Picture 1 (cartoon, rainbow, N blue to C red):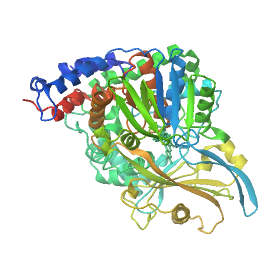
Picture 2: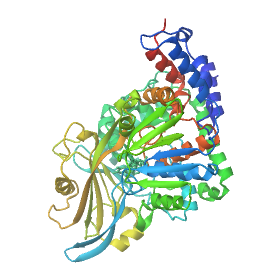
Picture 3: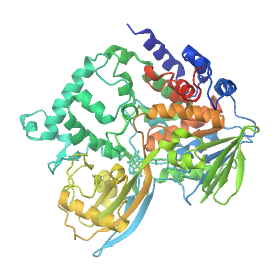
Length: 599
Ligand SMILES: Cc1cc2nc3c(=O)[nH]c(=O)nc-3n(C[C@H](O)[C@H](O)[C@H](O)COP(=O)(O)OP(=O)(O)OC[C@H]3O[C@@H](n4cnc5c(N)ncnc54)[C@H](O)[C@@H]3O)c2cc1C
């Protein structure tokens, strides 16, 4: 039998279906607050302030249509911003206007595909270097997300051809003992016990699986903890955290497994861990995404055939690279007279005028313009700067810097067959003084392209959380470091001639540290309070980072504000239901308790 609380939560999740934006805010301020928090006084917040906040919550949670001739600004022409603009343009009534701003003179944000003419010792080629993301993972089993639907829709609508990556390729970990371990090579024969990493995975994995199958309340953390602590509790092995799981976190977040939020990283797994096996299967959260998929496919039947296929583990865009996608989106937006893209136009400040219910933005040339709604797709740090520190929850936002080095060698067989390897936290400094996170064997991923380019293409990622509090090397130093690393790990001679380019991607990967969901719930309240939700914040600093999630964040925002509530702020779901039961009313409750002490 489900507990009443859980039954209620499941029902809520079912009810909230695909529209994360549903007007559930309205009942929150009153229905779920403890009785004592209903009367407040505070030195700086009068009862009138409290009443004002309650009124805003009620008002902003209501279904609100797009105002006539609405003017909407989107800050950021990365994939999140462009996808938002694309779906907004599809659904906004005539007379509306969308202006996209980006501080750079190009679209795509971190996505950058460059073709270089290389000539190494007389061997010439045209080589595609992905300087940021190189492939999209369309299936997200851990979070149960159906983000790939948005990808398929965009591909089909823009005549783009994407190729499944070679998903059967081996993936490696660089063991703290100093050799590559093929994770796909784990087989149940006695030899597996010779490799310490296999032993850890088998023992920890078995323990975790048994605990999961027969789980009881309290066996898994039910409050947010670091992913490291979670894995340790689930598997009973700290070494599994340090030697294996931390490598995965290096690959996805460039982050520290002992700081990243388990709740954020594990999504559905975290949310169901404290329910019985049967309750978890019965939970409505999966239904939420199924409903999203059903609605999406009903409106876009042409996506069905693609969706019915088994999702490839990786998708790449062949010889034009991943940047084909943002370029195609930007091109199609050009043909819509309601959309204007202002590149090389950085936004310095975002202010709200409550009397007019308008948002004023000022760019780096000190030009100001007034909008009905501003959607920022930048990082939390940038949003904090633009809003002048008014949104306190953004002050702890953190993103890490990553040094990227792309190398091409004319020789064709310098790396093992496989996708690449990740380096765990426990790798001793003498084996990884460069603070590398991982190495990708780019030439192995796209077979056809490799035939045309020839040679071996490698991508080295360094830094991430390991650069926190220190100065990153120069880009020239980074190339030398990458060569030394490749020599130590793969035996590629340091002086073997190659073509190499490097770039420090500053603040490129947002970190969801422990307590992320709580901060987001507070942020939602601050947006209500300070901007009456006329400012919305979306992107990797808030929801999951990654290309597929960026597409989904853009779709969700556009769909929500055109179909349900123009006053959605992009993070409202954190205060009503994306989190597991104990946190359900967290948003308003915490906010009110902090700002209005009970009297
Ligand atoms: C090296 C690297 C490798 C990666 N690999 C992968 C991968 O393999 N798979 C994957 O799924 N993801 C990967 N990612 C993550 C992925 O690139 C991002 O999640 C995704 O591109 C984010 O898109 P976005 O539009 O949300 O943000 P961004 O790409 O950051 O776009 C935000 C835009 O806002 C602009 N901007 C910022 N501040 C302002 C301002 N004040 N005014 C105007 N404009 C502003 C910026 O110029 C930028 O163009 C990788 C990232 C990096 C850096």
